[in-house]
Structures are given as C-alpha cells and as structure tokens.
Image 1 (spheres, rainbow, N blue to C red):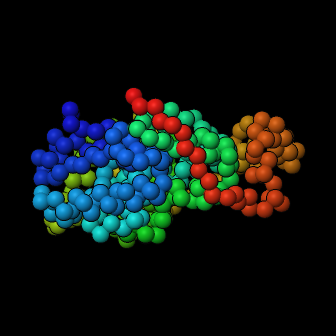
Image 2 (cartoon, helix red, strand yellow):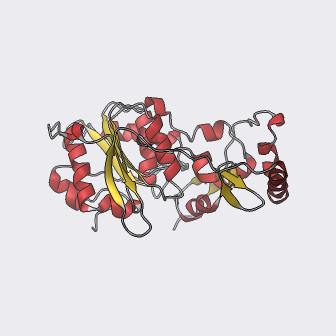
Image 3 (cartoon, helix red, strand yellow):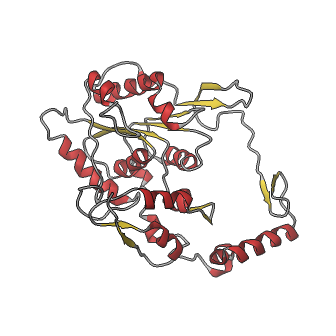
Length: 318
C-alpha cells in the first residue's frame, strides 16, 4: 500500500492487471505552479491537458480512464465535461457535483463546516489558494462564480460507473444529481450500504470495477453490458441490509414517494405543511440568526443574481 494515494486506485493491484496509475498534483498544490481553486471548471481543463499528454507516452495505449472517491470523484465530472478525446471511461465513487448546493449553501442555508476543513487543511502550495469561505459570505446567492463550479453534465458522454450511498452527508445529493443528468447512454449506478472508502477497496467491488475497465480500456467482450443499469441497497437498522438489488432505473418501480415538511415550531418532519404561524416563526428565527438569508426567502426581491467575483488567500505550506 506504500504507493497508493488516498482515495485512489491501488497500484499494487491495478498495475498487476496491466494498468498504469497516474496521481498528479493539481494546479497550485505542493510544487505545481499557479493558484489552486476548489472544484471548478479549471480543474477539468487542466486534467483534459493531462490526459492528452498521457496518451503520448510510449507505455499508453491511447485510452485513459479516471477512478477514485470524494475529491477524485468530483474532478471526474469536470474533466469528462471537457471531453478530452482520449478519455474512455470514468468511475466516480461519491462526489459533489455543485459546490454551491452541496458544500457551502446546503438547501439554501450556509453550512461552512467541511468547506472550512478543506480550506484550512489542504490545498497547500507555493502560491495562492481560493478563499471559498470569503466567497460564500460575499456571494450568498447563485452567480457566475458558483455556476463555474457546476460541471456541464450534458457534455459527459463517456461510459460511467457511478457509486452512491444514502448516508454521505457531503456527497449523496451531488452523486445522484450527476448520475441523473450526465448525457452518457452507458451509465451504471450502484448504491452501497456502507462508506465510500471501504466500499471502494472491497475486493468484490474492485473486481466489478475491473470488469468495467477491461471492457472499455482493453475492449474485452466480458459481458459487462449485461450488468444491471442500477443496483441498489435496502437498509435495515437491525442488520438485515439487502444489497445489489437489480433495477432499470432509480427510484425503482413500485416505490411510493412521500413529501415531508419541516415544522419550524415543533422541529420535526411531518406529512402536512406547517400552519402560517409556524412558517412565520421559522422565518423570524432564520432572519434573526442569519440576516444574510433575508434576501433568499423574499421572492419579491428578484432572482438575487450578483456579479462575478472571486477571492484568493495566501497559502501556508506545510
């Protein structure tokens, strides 16, 4: 495991199967030149160039795929949307697909906990790094800055092996959103019942992923196309989880959707909308604690779009 990068494929296994692994530093990180950004279309453009460089190496067949969890999944959305000619497939294991909705303004509410961890605990390099916290404070509503942090799903057309879960508070919504919206007609979804890292390195799941890559990178006729387009899990709090249930789509047929409402007074989810009094109490509490949201809950103020902007902060190298 000494050569394995966190959240990425293990060379000890994959190289023995005839694959080569590349783990580059992104722009502005460690010794890479430039300023680093947090999940946006610049990442995709940079990785487009990297993929095309890889295909020129004598040991490369001309087919490149991407794989990994978390950050290494997010970067795949942006890269695939840039359509590098030699990108052949992607395998995304739980990844944010909209920084505004998934990371800093979840459900329209400021939520900077993990964004702060990313900003304070990573992206160290020689130059500047994006100050996502200042940007969120300055631009609380959707604008060009945040639009740039959403990949162009309509341009993601390569075969895609997408893995999601119900319980990852950071990645769940974004993973399902991306799977629904990507334009590829060769996309498979598997919903596991555990956590991204143990699921990614599980021997059975690794073999499943190898079949996917063998099909599209090695052109092996291994029957991968017969894999169910959706395999989902049913969770049982008493320990009787059911996994790999086959379906043609998700949610599967026969599922009854239930709309739930947040009751601000009782602080509960209910099947009936709260009364006008309950809604007004919730609105006053939000405004008193987070005044910046007052615009967001007043539709008469218009769409609230703000001008494009960004913020950069000096990076401290460790």
